[in-house]
Amino acid sequence: MEAEIAALPGDGIGPEVVAEGLKVLRAVAEAYGHQFAIKQELFGGCAVDATGEPLPRAALEACRRAEAVLVGAVGGPKWADLNVEVRPEQGLLQLRRELGLFANLRPVRVLPMLVDASPLRPERLVGVDLVVVRELIGGIYFGERKEAGVEDLAAYDTMRYSAEEVRRVAHVAFRLAEQRRGILTSVDKANVLATSRLWRAVVSEVAQVYPAVQVENVLVDAATMHLLQRPARFDVLLTSNMFGDILTDEASMLAGSMGMLPSASLGIGTFGLYEPIHGSAPDIAGQGIANPLGTVLSVAMLLRHSLGLEAEAVAVEEAAEAVLETGYRTPDIAGPGSQQVGTAEMGELVAARLLGS
Image (cartoon, one colour):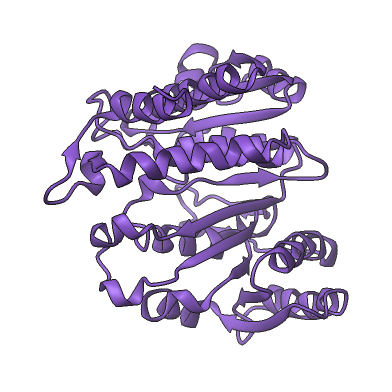
């Protein structure tokens, strides 16, 4: 197979972990006889410094030409002033909307060898294997807003959803649930929010198309509690933009570290954007200790969803698990008896497994 991949390393630890994701992607190409043309572009805070905008035209056009996009993280203390008009995070929101990526898939699976890395008791982690499907380009992050002025110290952000926005992401979640254990949990705040009452009504409508899927509605505050008390009950969670953002950060603690979790942002067709769920982690940037496995597993999702290479995706996942089984750990998941390695070393170990060396 020949495919073009756009890479947007971003800021902080983004370039470090993306480098290891690309290393694994190149190992897949070598092992399976594929050709991946990789085009890297500036994105986020570094792009603001170089061009004055977080998503330069060259980066957007590279993404539009590509079969898939691999992204690091954006932002950091240098660009932390919330009062400036141009911020790195705006580039990520713009990219999602420009590319029509309305469904964000965030799988959370607790690997047996990492149970001790989680702050939860081991017995609560048995059988945890869930996917959060987050609506990505609607809701409060994209609604009408007003910043607080110097004299008028009031601001607002508007949460708005149309029935069609809910319907299209609900179909993604239901189809995924059909392929898994057949349980879908729709998370909302229907006892308070009008948008959540619309959300619940549309999800109930879409559920009629998928009679084999068991559906339950859970309020978001209850969902946060259940994720810690009995997370194995969940299969597919369907959420709005802001709720999904918060819930998946919480769910990362089940897996032991935010550095372990991948994500895929999808729209119509096979094109997708793939990134670890963590941020730019400026406190450890440049130290070579960031966990690249969230990015490596995002590469596996890229191979599966955008390139249709299921065997290669499974091989990447199995290679990452084999390295962990052998006892290698980055500092965020290190424990007694483990062999601590850095970012580049972890990427090299996974790539070597793929190449049989």
